[in-house]
Image (tube, one colour):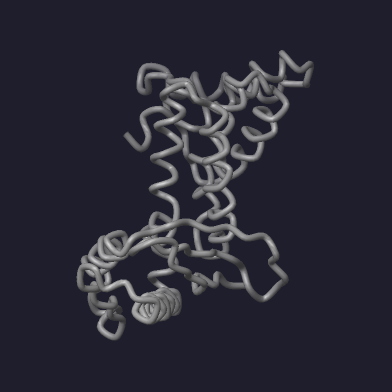
Amino acid sequence: TFIRPDVLSPVCFQVYEIVVMRSGSFDSHRVSVERRYSDFSRFHHKLQEEFSEELEEVALPRKLLSGNFSPEIIAERRLALQDYLAKLYAVRCIRHSPHFPTFFTEQEQRRAHGLLRAGQFRPAAEQLQKVLEVEEKLLPWQSPSLIVPTLSALAVCYRDLEEPEQAFATAQRALPPVRRYGLKAYRAALLELLVDLGYQLGRPVAQLQDELTVLRDAERGRVSPRSLKELVVQQFP
């Protein structure tokens, strides 16, 4: 299974649609993001700072001259950027790097968190769901903890939309990677949310409550407890 970040089409001017999909198995679900050439350029410079030797044979296509947007030039640029992403993917340390998923999700994450902070929870949840779908396609090469911030933000949105079932299920999904990778701040906040929602929904929460109590006792005096929403709104300022 691998990502095929190789389907690009010009939307307008220098904006390109990147379709992210898994290959090796049938993947009919289309997930895409839009990026400008300047986004590719910033991405490339970040990679060069960390992987200069590995990128010796990977060159970012040159910037188009202003106003040079004929169909032939755009098609040529699309193929060049397609080839560029394919070459990046072929470098193992790059596709495992945190920079790789950031390129495909950061803009959407910032947009979603701006909506969340503004109290626009429905459009924020829709944007976060799109981010989650991209991250899920990247998971074979990234830590499962990649999806924790997105799931946490989604759980907050669903809770504030008064959709407790959705919020509970989303927070439940985030908890295993949080436990496994020792994300203590998220663990306490998720447990607190799950306990509150569990009581509301009539779910058994005794084990979750015990886990939260042990965690809070261990952190007492060292960590200031924060709610999941407090953690979420501090991300992507």
